[in-house]
Structure formats: C-alpha cells, structure tokens
Length: 350
Ligand SMILES: [Zn+2]
Image (cartoon, rainbow, N blue to C red; front, side):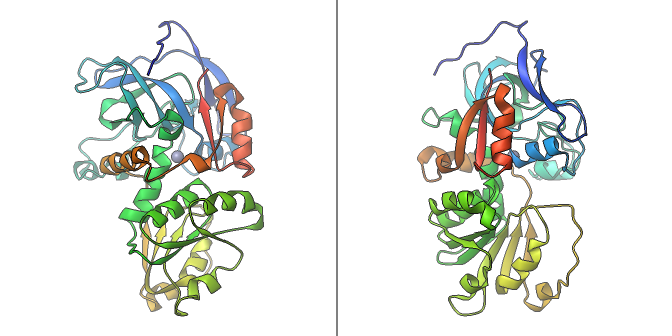
C-alpha cells in the first residue's frame, strides 16, 4: 500500500457546510490541520456520505452544528503524522476512525466504555471538521487498524455497519429462525436487515413504491421485500406477529406500525429517528408486553467486531455502494443518494 504525503503548505478541497440555511454546502480550499499531542493526521482515502450529511445540507437536522464545518464522519485512510504522546500508531498505518472526536474522559458514561452516550460528545462533520477533504485530525483513541485485504472504499463504511450491529446485535435479541421486519430501506435499514440475516433470522424489509431500487439491493442480502402492508408477512407463521422489528425509518410515526406487527413479548429496536411528535395510542406496548429499545451510535468493541466481519467477508458492504465521486463532485453524490438512486455514495479527496 502506498501513500504520498503532500507538502505541508498545500491547501485541499473540502466539502464545507457553512451556514444553517438550506443548501449551505460548497467546496472550499482549507489549510492542512495541525494536530495535538494525542492526535494523528489521517490522509483520507475514502469517505462515505451519510444521511446526516444530507440532513445538514437540506437543513432538516436536529443537532447543533459548529458552522463552518467540513462534512463527513465515515472515513478511513493512512496515518501521515503522529502526535508526540501517541503510542502504538505509526505513519503508514491503514486505519478507520470512530466518530466521537471529542468526549469528556471523566463523564460516567465514558468511564463505563459508553463514551458514545456521553452527552458532551462532539462528532466529526458537525462538532469538529470531518473527512470530506484530504486531511483530518483524529484522536488516536478512536483509531482502528484495517487489514490490507479490506479496501478503503468498503472500510470507510465501517461506521454505518457499527450502527447496524448495535441496533441488531446489542440492542435486540435475535435467535436463528426468528422472523424480523426492518422498517425503512435507507443505508441503515439495509445494513440492519443484512446483519439480522447474519444472526440467522428470516428478514423482510419494508418500504414505499419509490424505494423499489433500494429494496432490490436488500434482496441481495437474502431479505424479502415488502412494499406496503407488512402485517401478512408478520403473521405468516402463527398469526401472532413477527419476533422483532427494527425501526430504521426517518419518521417516528412508523413506531405505530412496529407496535402493530410485533408479537406479544416481542421487541422493537428503534434506530431511525425524526423530530415529529407522535399522535397515537401506545397502549399496545403495555398490552403486548413489548420491549422498546432505542439504539444510538457504537463504541470500541463494536468497531473491532465489525472490522473483523468485513475483513473476513462474512459481512459485505459492496452491494450498497452506488459509486465513488471526487469530493469536488459532492453535489452529484449527495443528490443521487437523496433521490434514492443509490443507497450509499462514497467520496475520495482530490
Ligand atoms: Zn453516518
């Protein structure tokens, strides 16, 4: 593997979200970041476009953004510089980075290893400059090695796979043969469906007529596809409903569907979110003794496990990758994902 560090004075093109107004994203030339003693400088090889990048672009996000900020939190590349306090990492290492760029090391959640749930956490792409550019400053505590056989175009998608792993493996309970329904065929929905297949479930993924293309891709993971009413599939085995529902839709109203199709004593893992208030009765949650579990982000052991799954080929992200664009063509990459023409767009720096 070769890498070519550029001159220290060179500026690089970056996809910058510069203001809260809709459409406030443009390519700007930025300075190479300087690093602190505990950081590395990572030369980005590839960076995935996330739904959250699209939400900041279309200004329908619900988290605080430090404008102007370089977008992108799904990335991998080579280390080109190492801070003086950093141990165990060296120039040339192939790595991916987690998203929790800033955390409080004394927060009780951090001390439990659940720094992803530290309320003071700030991530790449909204809290600090992200990776849709050539160089990004990364604290060494969130780096993971990437084996040579795993190309960066795939490795950069470790992050959404970790979101799926947490929602499907850690925050749900699947036994082989369970029937699981996934609501929402975005990146996270499809990856959750694939992860549930890996756990031995029979899986159906539910979408709308305009999701047909993305649902076709879910079929490559051995999932059944439902457009419209999921209840007949849920009830197929014994009439009581499916064992679990993974709600990966971006509108919380789908919780109503989940409560309806899950069997008594079943579970709902909710990973999709949207700020809309709900206007329905949640008594079925009580009456059916349903476990409703939120799932947010991921932490170090999940990353190690997902990299192992990607490297061994047990988990394959190739079907979701719709193309690789230079960062200067971010608009086309964003637009195609926004329209649902591709499940996942990947960028590379110029
Ligand atoms: Zn993401």
